[in-house]
Image 1 (spheres, chains in turn red, green):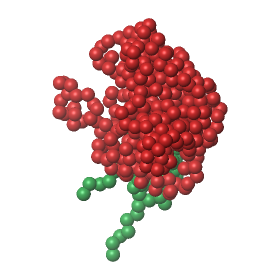
Image 2: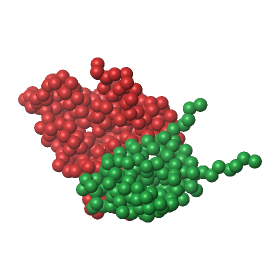
Image 3: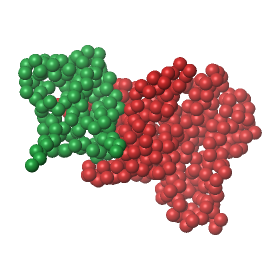
Image 4: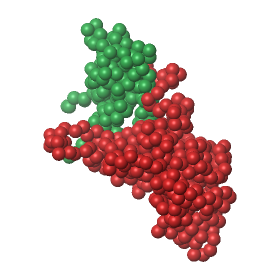
Length: 343
Length: 144
């Protein structure tokens, strides 16, 4: 069990000694039980930090934002930023480090192990509360305890945990400067890629029916892109609106830019967007599940990324976010890569 | 009585400059007969083909996409086709995953000396595409 006071003490110490310029963590949000990202810059604020089953955000996104902001104001980072990272979050930081997005010494990773559980899926919780609103959530061994107006509600964590946490193989942040909680790697709640395997048992026709339904529903709000720490490109290939326009950009330049995908939210364009995104995340996605959580129309984006992750693992023996010095999936190859499909 | 139009699949063929493009040339100068359904697009190397090209070709109405380059070990840029092998496998798996017929995407190695093989690859591909009919799944809807 992680004592949240330990996390607060560490954060306070780091800030008081000036070893870090900020701590990115979680604090109680303004809506019910949900935690929200917190940016702590003074030691007194450290007591705001929380750690509970609603800490589902992948905070490494804010390391990317910080980096972009520093570049924008042309300032050197100076002291590092501390960040609270779960197993999957720490792996996404490793991918960012692999890609030299920032340096290892620019970030102080306060790892938190999910131990035997994981984070909550709000959609799974709703039916258990019969319409009541929970005001607090807490870890307790293999259970989650929710506080509602009608008293405490104890639920087995596996009933309300996010799918990705059930399938998680490595709930412990291997890359860290400080770490809390036990390493319970090897716990098996569901087989890895269980949801994907179940989905793939369907025939090609059913798969298309499923996906065409979801591709029709995408509204192209780009929430999945905004929430993803790996989607850090300044110019997104799928969205011509992000091309920088300077005083030197002529109308002709603008008109002649390659538009791979139209902006209208119609099926064919949504497919190209979501498929391209899945390809760009192949070997980089660490399955933090934020895209699917942020999606306002519940497109199962995670399935696409999961598919890529499994192919990379099975065909090329590739594990995303395994080590900082490791190769990237699509910029490396092995002689033993399969080639039977090539005529 | 109107004449029944025969369906001819449209194939977009990404050919590498050093091998497959020269191979297609050889098929031509050797006067080998093969279906005229493929639109060749020459690229510097198969390793330079972004999966985005393939999605884009389907998006703009291709019935099938062919990627063809040098045999493993023969790449002009030493390792381009090794990289392509990985990327193309991933996009192939992804297309199949969402329910696109596996026969719509094909990859082959055709060297500059294999004119006959190039003709065979195109013939086989077109024969496999014909029963599938027009590709409507990924195609951009036409504005009325």
